[in-house]
Picture 1: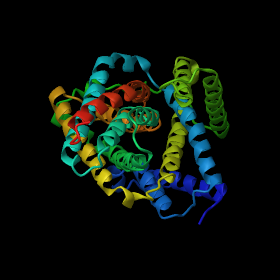
Picture 2 (picture 1 turned 45 degrees about the vertical axis):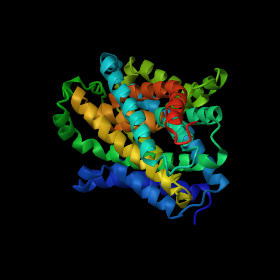
Picture 3 (picture 1 turned 90 degrees about the vertical axis):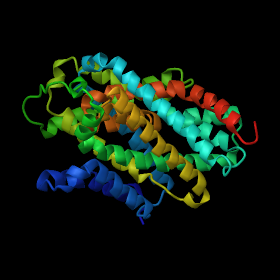
Picture 4 (picture 1 turned 90 degrees about the horizontal axis):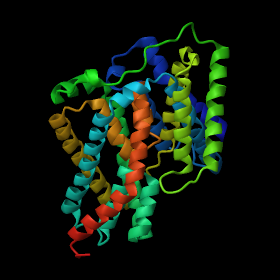
Length: 385
């Protein structure tokens, strides 16, 4: 069992590079069904659950530091090649998809509560209100709603467990959905021409070792500068330190995208490498311990997820939404700011700014939505709270 950082990091990097290398070398048909990023996530999750490394204080600290450092650097590099004008042109449609995603999540939560309310604890409505806060916003919204409605501490772990497991399954499915996009878009009659595409490549030359090191240094420096600046800004409500950091790094990349430096051949492949590393690090934190303690609420969570998918698919059909915007709109709420941009990067780099903005919008609305749902669900409670 691995208990120190360097062996852990070696395994994570090997896993992150394994499937992209195999795809490039052999081009197996497997990769058309399960993209390398999905296989990386599944492999590292399996290794984590199997106990290849122990969650020691040293490894847990390394995971936090890697996520903290990689996310802003990745977003900065991704922004360098993005055409923001394409995103701005998509605004109203993008917000409509986001609104439908949120509505389908909330309706699914109400339906799931009606199905399971007699089997859940008396405070089951509080559990689902907390879930609605984190599935439209994030963990900060969940904590705010928990404190506001008085969710007992002993009922919080099942909510967190259901959130983590359902989110993990949904991430894998969304990463795997890329190959189904044409079929889904034909079914919904979506206008794929309206999708934003990454800016036409301006890169010239080939990436060199010096160029890779230079851009990696720039990206990490921008990330650290963003964190330092974020620490000086007021962290209130949804504008946490992480939220400020992500926004600053995103803006820095978008500013650089308007300069001649955007023509470098390095940022795109380097961003791909950091993306694989970040996904591997996120997967390495998987821990399904305690699953048996909350089987009922796990069932409730997966019921909500299935109903959300069904309702959102019907909305997509009715309003002609495409799979890409549906995917990032859903994950921007269920997954949040850490994962929605990662998913968007696997669809189209031009969608990354949209994913960041949608995740921020979810954080803005999450607490209010959770409190609203608490009022709705309490009125449906068998105890008549």
